[in-house]
Image (cartoon, rainbow, N blue to C red; front, top):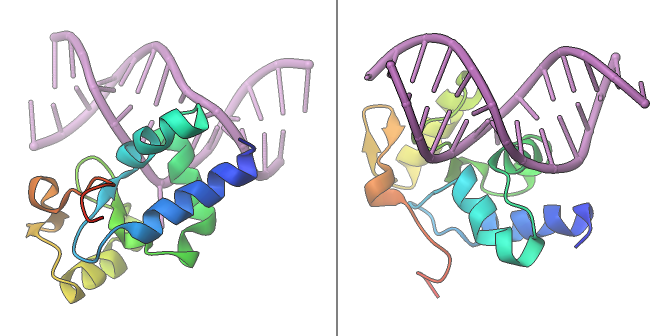
Length: 104
DNA sequence: AGGTTGACCGTCA
DNA sequence: GTGACGGCCAACC
Protein backbone atom coordinates (compact mmCIF):
# COMPACT_ATOMS: atom_id res chain seq x y z
CA UNK A 1 0.00 0.00 0.00
CA UNK A 2 1.54 3.28 -1.10
CA UNK A 3 1.50 6.33 1.19
CA UNK A 4 -0.99 7.91 -1.16
CA UNK A 5 -3.33 4.96 -0.90
CA UNK A 6 -2.98 5.07 2.85
CA UNK A 7 -4.14 8.67 2.88
CA UNK A 8 -7.16 7.68 0.82
CA UNK A 9 -7.92 4.79 3.14
CA UNK A 10 -7.83 7.13 6.14
CA UNK A 11 -10.12 9.68 4.50
CA UNK A 12 -12.47 6.96 3.35
CA UNK A 13 -12.77 5.55 6.85
CA UNK A 14 -13.26 8.97 8.45
CA UNK A 15 -15.97 9.63 5.91
CA UNK A 16 -17.84 6.56 7.17
CA UNK A 17 -17.99 7.70 10.80
CA UNK A 18 -21.66 8.40 11.53
CA UNK A 19 -22.72 11.89 12.69
CA UNK A 20 -22.72 12.14 16.46
CA UNK A 21 -20.03 9.49 16.75
CA UNK A 22 -16.23 9.79 16.77
CA UNK A 23 -13.01 7.77 16.48
CA UNK A 24 -9.66 8.62 18.04
CA UNK A 25 -6.59 9.03 15.83
CA UNK A 26 -5.21 5.86 17.35
CA UNK A 27 -8.43 3.96 16.67
CA UNK A 28 -8.27 4.98 13.01
CA UNK A 29 -4.66 3.84 12.82
CA UNK A 30 -5.54 0.52 14.45
CA UNK A 31 -8.51 -0.06 12.20
CA UNK A 32 -6.28 0.31 9.13
CA UNK A 33 -3.31 -1.54 10.62
CA UNK A 34 -4.01 -4.93 9.07
CA UNK A 35 -4.75 -3.55 5.64
CA UNK A 36 -1.96 -0.97 5.59
CA UNK A 37 0.78 -2.62 7.58
CA UNK A 38 1.27 0.56 9.61
CA UNK A 39 -0.33 1.73 12.82
CA UNK A 40 0.68 5.22 13.82
CA UNK A 41 -1.70 7.63 15.51
CA UNK A 42 0.76 10.43 14.82
CA UNK A 43 0.70 9.64 11.11
CA UNK A 44 -3.11 9.78 11.09
CA UNK A 45 -2.84 13.12 12.90
CA UNK A 46 -0.63 14.63 10.27
CA UNK A 47 -2.81 13.28 7.50
CA UNK A 48 -5.85 14.92 9.09
CA UNK A 49 -3.91 18.16 9.46
CA UNK A 50 -3.25 18.17 5.70
CA UNK A 51 -6.35 16.56 4.24
CA UNK A 52 -8.88 16.76 7.08
CA UNK A 53 -10.76 19.63 5.48
CA UNK A 54 -12.01 17.22 2.80
CA UNK A 55 -13.92 15.08 5.32
CA UNK A 56 -15.63 15.22 8.72
CA UNK A 57 -12.46 16.03 10.62
CA UNK A 58 -14.33 16.87 13.82
CA UNK A 59 -15.29 13.18 14.07
CA UNK A 60 -11.66 12.28 14.70
CA UNK A 61 -10.45 13.34 18.14
CA UNK A 62 -7.51 12.52 20.36
CA UNK A 63 -7.73 9.77 22.97
CA UNK A 64 -8.95 12.24 25.59
CA UNK A 65 -11.89 13.30 23.45
CA UNK A 66 -10.43 16.77 22.91
CA UNK A 67 -8.94 18.73 20.02
CA UNK A 68 -5.95 21.09 19.81
CA UNK A 69 -6.73 24.66 20.87
CA UNK A 70 -6.50 26.00 17.33
CA UNK A 71 -9.62 24.19 16.17
CA UNK A 72 -11.30 23.41 19.49
CA UNK A 73 -14.01 26.06 19.17
CA UNK A 74 -15.03 25.03 15.66
CA UNK A 75 -14.99 21.36 16.63
CA UNK A 76 -17.20 22.01 19.65
CA UNK A 77 -19.73 23.87 17.51
CA UNK A 78 -19.91 20.91 15.13
CA UNK A 79 -20.26 18.41 17.96
CA UNK A 80 -23.15 20.41 19.37
CA UNK A 81 -24.71 20.70 15.94
CA UNK A 82 -24.89 16.95 15.45
CA UNK A 83 -25.57 15.95 19.04
CA UNK A 84 -22.26 14.29 19.84
CA UNK A 85 -22.23 13.15 23.50
CA UNK A 86 -20.06 15.64 25.40
CA UNK A 87 -18.46 15.72 28.81
CA UNK A 88 -17.60 19.31 29.73
CA UNK A 89 -15.85 20.54 26.59
CA UNK A 90 -14.67 17.12 25.54
CA UNK A 91 -16.31 14.26 23.70
CA UNK A 92 -17.56 11.47 25.94
CA UNK A 93 -15.51 8.73 24.31
CA UNK A 94 -17.38 5.98 26.07
CA UNK A 95 -20.68 7.08 24.60
CA UNK A 96 -19.54 8.49 21.26
CA UNK A 97 -16.74 6.09 20.36
CA UNK A 98 -17.45 4.27 17.11
CA UNK A 99 -15.82 1.27 15.48
CA UNK A 100 -16.07 0.37 11.80
CA UNK A 101 -18.48 -2.49 11.38
CA UNK A 102 -20.90 -1.06 13.91
CA UNK A 103 -23.12 0.90 11.61
CA UNK A 104 -23.01 -1.43 8.62
C1' DA B 1 22.18 13.16 5.18
C1' DG B 2 20.65 14.37 9.76
C1' DG B 3 17.83 16.94 13.06
C1' DT B 4 13.28 18.86 14.27
C1' DT B 5 8.48 18.96 14.33
C1' DG B 6 3.66 17.48 14.61
C1' DA B 7 -4.66 17.88 14.73
C1' DC B 8 -0.82 11.22 18.78
C1' DC B 9 -0.71 7.30 22.51
C1' DG B 10 0.32 4.22 26.44
C1' DT B 11 2.84 3.84 30.64
C1' DC B 12 4.65 5.26 34.87
C1' DA B 13 5.20 8.55 38.72
C1' DG C 1 -6.60 14.81 37.99
C1' DT C 2 -1.25 16.32 36.09
C1' DG C 3 3.48 15.90 33.86
C1' DA C 4 7.61 13.42 31.84
C1' DC C 5 9.31 9.88 28.54
C1' DG C 6 9.76 6.84 24.69
C1' DG C 7 7.82 5.18 20.55
C1' DC C 8 5.83 6.34 16.31
C1' DC C 9 6.44 7.81 10.87
C1' DA C 10 6.19 11.20 7.32
C1' DA C 11 7.03 16.13 6.19
C1' DC C 12 10.18 19.91 6.39
C1' DC C 13 13.92 22.37 6.99
